[in-house]
Image (tube, rainbow, N blue to C red; front, top):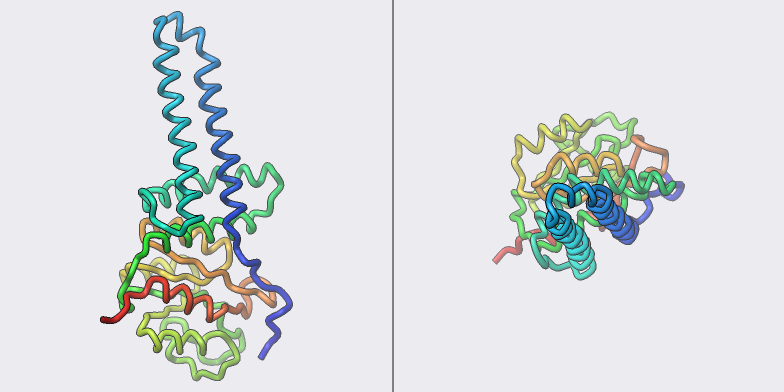
Length: 260
């Protein structure tokens, strides 16, 4: 067995993304105020009551931004679907993430740290919905680099070709698939991954990949719920990567529909 302790994925923390959401919310509120304050005198020239009307609109927008941020924080902190969690995932994935990445870059934060925190936030929002899915409607999607590069038996397309030698993580994943009756696929890239999802039409995807691929995959798959598990990279990116089987097992137990 090769050494898995040289480097590994940092455990993702939601706190960084939550903090950046707070900063972004303040920036948005400040921008809304400036939009109202700068042309204020010009609006009064048009109609005396117009500044007040625009001001009310700006207050509503600011309140919505603050309320939305608060709901996201509560949802992730409590792990419960408080209000419109699916819609909030849309806001985070499609709108907040690009702005937060920009804010983080201005603050000098590492992009992968932000992505790790985003993945943790996304996972929390998905599991907070208490989704329960039948095993045959769950797809576990893996990157091809999780198989040893010198293995002669390529499992892309059919993971069950694995001879279960135990030299890489594939053996444990095959056993997970058989244990729960879950479909597991290995994709060589984003295009093939999207093709597999279209063909199999799962209700939930559990994806294993690096920060960049997981982030783009979560964005591309919305509204399909995706739980992301970061891989470990003892030899660097895209080469003989590893995944913690226990994390996959734990994630599946949260979403699997129990047999009656």
